[in-house]
Length: 273
Image 1: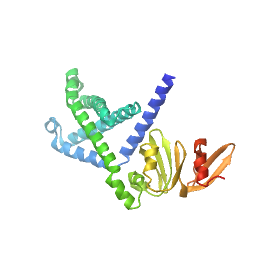
Image 2: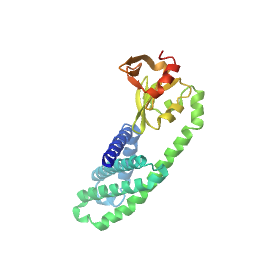
Image 3: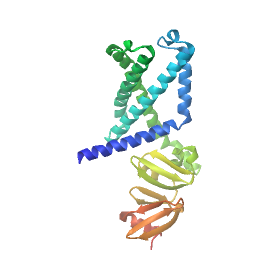
Image 4: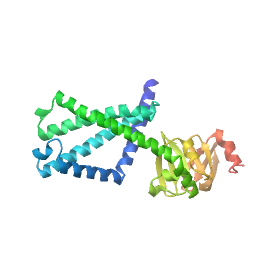
């Protein structure tokens, strides 16, 4: 049983990691930052690369170095973050192990890229330790900064910005969604540690609890019909009964199950006789 539970945890963390990375790689900001970093670092040529490499070779070297270390560091750091989240670690407890794991992974990548470009003779235990000395503190500081920014965003998201959203008639939850998915909320469903929000403009995943998401619909009348599902009353197309089951069909033709513990609420809302 414990082995099966561990496999389930690993499966969930892998799916959560891939979702987070997909979000990063679908953001234009990620590519703008990477291009800016390649341009500036390639131009300055740190760590002796200005003298040892020609203009084109230097930019190619730093393009490979920056993109590969970002990809590997992001993968390892995000996976450790999701894994520790599964184990109940708070964000402030996570940033050191996240930074250490990402720093080790980045050091290995840097050593391998250097070995390919400058020769394998330079790859040694001393060189790896030197890279770890550079990478670990930087990775830990970056992880701490990311945690701090997320905490600040969470606080501001539940404070004044939420009041502004309510004054504008826009639910706080909608303010969390990508711009192209913002619209009238139809339903919400739990997916691992995420909430899948369905609007009239599509679907988006938010890393939060369902009850917190429900608290941020801000006056949008709806109903929790299952421990994993919430539906807006104006998004209901039909209610289906059969074979001892009750399902609610939304306006986007999705069918969501109603659990027995929420049947009384559904009846109170006038959806069932």
